[in-house]
Image (cartoon, rainbow, N blue to C red; front, side, top):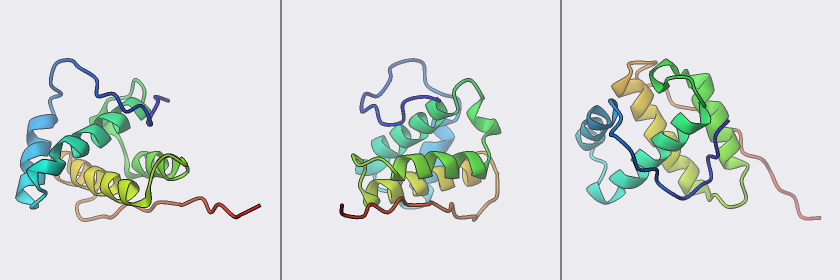
Length: 113
């Protein structure tokens, strides 16, 4: 499993899914100012998958990633929502997996000691 919390954006050749993902984000009205973060969430998800190709990812994979993300004390609820939106669009619009299906995220409840 990759480090989903690393804030560095890796540098390398563009992914084959990046251009269609950008187009899908634009068609869904996501602002250009947020585009970078949607791509970062998708890349972190790809890292989470380790060596499995992202186009073979399932909704269960995405929900596992999002649940892991939600359990991090360094990640806010709005960031989990943004990552959820990013992966819903990536899997549904770019890869055609479960179009219109929304991800379920299990949030860890932290109770005061």
